[in-house]
Length: 304
Image 1: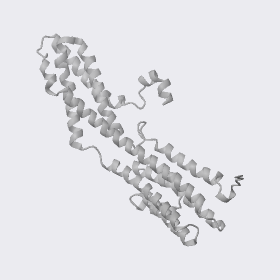
Image 2 (image 1 turned 45 degrees about the horizontal axis):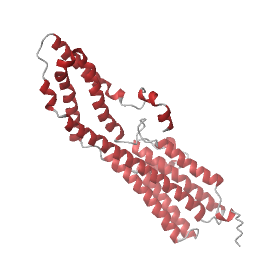
Image 3 (image 1 turned 90 degrees about the vertical axis):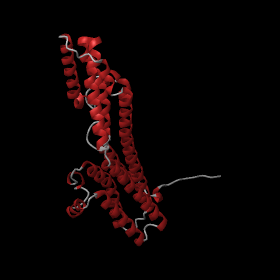
Image 4 (image 1 turned 120 degrees about the vertical axis):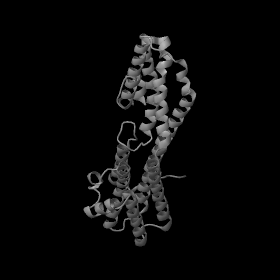
């Protein structure tokens, strides 16, 4: 946000992260068509038809574009909230596991650290699942080859990791290292993490209805191609740049909706899932390296 405020002019002329590369051919098509109509008008062909531009009412087209963009942004923001909730749930889970599960023998601590390492793996597995990418490059350091094989065999690997986390909690409860109320609370947090995965799946598996997307594109193209017939009588050779500006605006708004309706990819306008997963990993590392169980805190409270 600070970069946006201090570099406003630079952002206005940048193409990285914008929709210009994806719409430039359509805009160029409309400009060339405008030039053609201007040329025909110069040679006295009856191309000036002011009523043609009203075939597709601008108000109707504007409402369709607004609905399209708002729907896409709702999907983007819902995806961001789901990942924010997942991040918060993992932080709570880390704190309760680290402080609430007893370590009676050295093996208890090893199992606890192994369980905590599955939490960033849960986020990474969710990210890779949403992107349709393989698990091995990023998860091979956490899981064995047999575990990776099992994760690759299931449809959603994050859910399998959630099963393993639940098994760990049940095991610690049977060992007497965790009480029933703490275990229930931890299971509730894991359930909430799984709900976040389900929210992301719903966004990913429910695209914009095809008929709506096709109809909007058709109306945009018709509107932009009819504009030169209305403008050429007043603008002459200025028709092409004006049509280009209008088509750039309309096609750009529509392309923004297409760009953000699936927020889980690798594009500049998608959610920064890689950074979110790195922050979760850093949380685990900080807890293991610098976290302390409650009994190690020496609080000298002088209450008089």
